[in-house]
Amino acid sequence: MQRPARVALGAGALFLASLSATTGPVLAAPCDTASTALQNGGFEVPLVPAGTFAFFDAVDVPPWQTTDTEGKIEIWGAGFGGVPADEGVNFAEINANSPGTLYQDVVSTPGQTMTWTLRHRGRGGDDVMRVLIGDATTADVTSDSGWDYFSPDLTDGVAGWGSHTDQYVVPAGQTCTRFAFRAISTGSGNDSVGNFLDDVSFAIAIPPTPTPPPNVTIPPTSTGLFADRPRRNEPTLAIVLLALSGLGAGSWLLGRRAGRGR
Figure 1 (cartoon, helix red, strand yellow):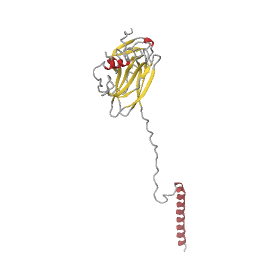
Figure 2 (figure 1 turned 30 degrees about the vertical axis):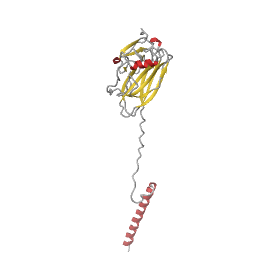
Figure 3 (figure 1 turned 120 degrees about the vertical axis):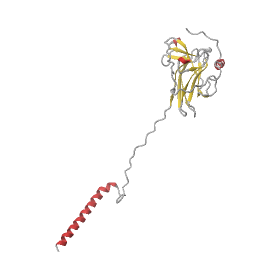
């Protein structure tokens, strides 16, 4: 059964309510060294049967975290409310019990270029969300403090899933990066209704492998007599030398015989 409607708020009030949902900044624990990519980007864990929806404690939707006032993450099964999943069979609604932010912290390498992608859809009209990225040790999910990247407002309606992508270069010294997906406003005007999210991921640009130089073997340099002559003449020179040696030997033999004949 669909949850009861809550008191409608304007876009500005929605955002202020989200900031007051928690007390103080929410900063990162040390990044898990295995978390080098966004995980569970399709919200397939835990599995929600088609045509239904459910609320889960954030700990049951690893490794997603949330600013929801009750610490819940709302996941829909494909087809509930007539809404298909964009990828897989599940998707999330950023607003669970309050206008919120879903986020993850991942290991990063300074200088890397990360290309993020996501699918976003409105629930009761044109919903608006934003992507925030920054150092997990300073980025505060309850405010705009500590972030070094803000996407433009991403606006999508009920007709279908919108596709969005952009790039982020990890600053020097930043080894744990926070990706956050924040609800800004809803087309329904209801503080807990809107901003579907699915198929969240990022890719790291891998530089091309340099081509090794060709393996060129340089022949040794000749030394001695005729070293500066072209190599193609060497067989001819050898024949000439042998011929000269033969002539010399013949002349010597003739000389010996002539001496005996006297």
